[in-house]
Amino acid sequence: MEKAHIGIIGGSGLYQMEGLSEVREVSVETPFGKPSDNFILGTLEGVPVTFLARHGRGHRILPTELPFRANIYAMKLLGVEWIISASAVGSLQEQYAPTDIVIPDQFFDRTRGRVSTFFGEGVVGHITFAHPVCSDLSGILVQSCETVGVKVHNGGTYLCMEGPAFSTLAESRLYRNWGMDVIGMTNLQEAKLAREAEICYATMALVTDYDCWHPDHDAVTIDMVIEYLNKNSANAQKVIREAVWRLSKFGKSCQYSSAIKNAILTNPNAIPPATKKKLAAIIGKYVGE
Image 1 (cartoon, one colour):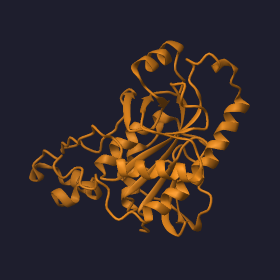
Image 2 (cartoon, rainbow, N blue to C red):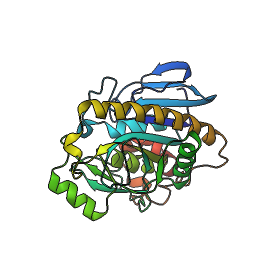
Image 3 (spheres, rainbow, N blue to C red):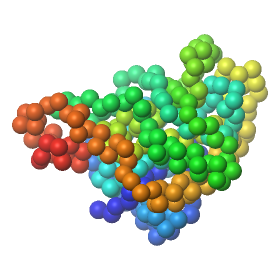
Image 4 (tube, rainbow, N blue to C red):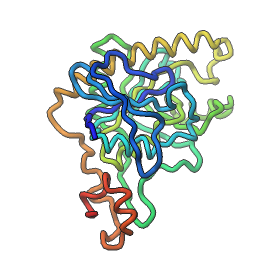
């Protein structure tokens, strides 16, 4: 199978990666079913990368329906060590304006019953998740935004809600009072699974609008949102190109490249052979096959 050390997950408004050369499409089968779409492999700034449209081309998969485990496991099979996630978000604070980019360093979970672990079926593991994103990759994204002239905010909390409906006014006001910064529907599960897969992960939260708490929220039109989505997509493309180039010069592995070394509590001899085989790409080097 072809390999690429850098993976890009594109969210609402970012359905393809411009500037790729030597492009080919790859279908990846995983023990967790099919990913959201085929992966697009190519080179960007001379660096091998792979791109996945999170919601599938044509935006056909709800946040709740996303095959998170298949998406991240497929990235692992493709040799990905770094994932840059781009996601449309609503702003919960005045200082994060539409078309700004926020690089969150924390997540808060408001989803309900989503599977966000590879463990189970006879193997128990507990990752540390106090710091849910890689500070090295986040720093590269901040530097890349600054280099290409996109307004960026370093740090903040991404509240992950269930969706697909947006927040009620009461919820939006509460999240603001809790000190949440941006709100989206997808990135928490990706971050947890990437950590278990020992893949470095960071989010580019692309602000499309203020959430419904804002007094001007009802004046926002569909045309305005589409305009912001398009501008965010163009900005994200520029930032990603710069970040990929910087990552290619980055001289060390992700700080979480051994994240589950001490996380697995189950005696290797007690793990069912079928589970060892299913999770071989992730736990094989620690428990054998």
